[in-house]
Image (cartoon, rainbow, N blue to C red):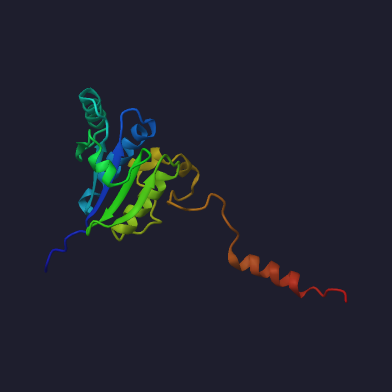
Length: 177
């Protein structure tokens, strides 16, 4: 019996201490990393702050939020330029071969849902599983979802059977000629 190595998936997030959405995203990334690290997922935060004090502040923020993945400094923006970062936060999800499978630039209120879905999909996991308890605080709408599944519509549709019956009744009525 041979042990199968998990798929590798790396999330690179460009960050700055002046970026409020970046700060909001940090605890989510920490929890996401903790949940899926054993499955081959890892995250890296790259701070583009230039001043030593700001770089230290970024590392302190990461520590406060329980970040266990690397927090790197790109004070001369060499890496940020290579990735063509123009807005913060900028998130790149890359597969084992280094190919970007998802790129998000700027703040987006659906980013948590999108990231969770992409991470699960890339690791070969069901995307409709309920949101893990550790991540639920980052999904305010999840409390209103019956199953807590990612991407589930908030409004329940009528079962297909009932809709077809109604449609059949309507179409069976004779129209005047």
